[in-house]
Image (cartoon, rainbow, N blue to C red; front, side, top):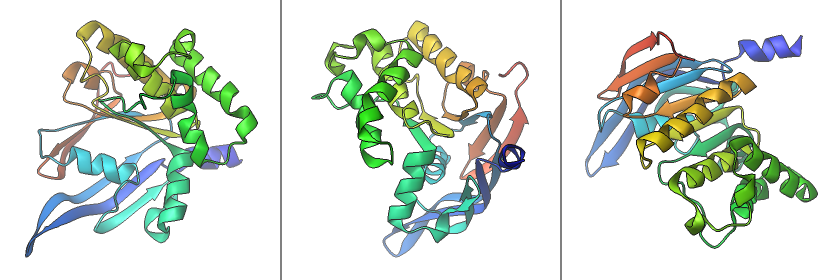
Length: 238
């Protein structure tokens, strides 16, 4: 059956991926020989010190940057074979992003912010409002739909950002330090929300310095100097 076949294909597959950035006459190596499979519905945490390659790995997984070595397949699709336009369509259809700083547009209402990714997809416009409303209900802030970002608490702003990431119904959600700007109690609430998403079939990759958040994952990858130094199951992870 097709469903079984889709379940067998990793959402993300990296083979020998490297990334170098030119710097004058030389180059800086950010990633080296990274091999990783991320299964559908997996909750994966990525940790490492500053400069370990976490941000570069996230950018490649999110198709915001391309590797300079190795191969990346997103949902079985070889990313290197796609031009920028096709890559943008695949990214919009497949990936949702959650950032530490929320990145909500201050001039728009919460509902309009959540609708924004639908501007660039194949979703018919008459359904935008209903989809955005459902996404806000999913994260528990439907009552804030007509407010501006400046009127939200930090936790509400991050919930709005998660709703925006989910509105396209992506297979893969990438979260970069999603609790980093929140107090501990609010961070726990956001962690509860993010770690519940694999139960709905979403694949979630968390990049974090927060050991408590990483401990909620089913699997933990640690990076050092651009290389994976450990890839382990987490006891008690979801």
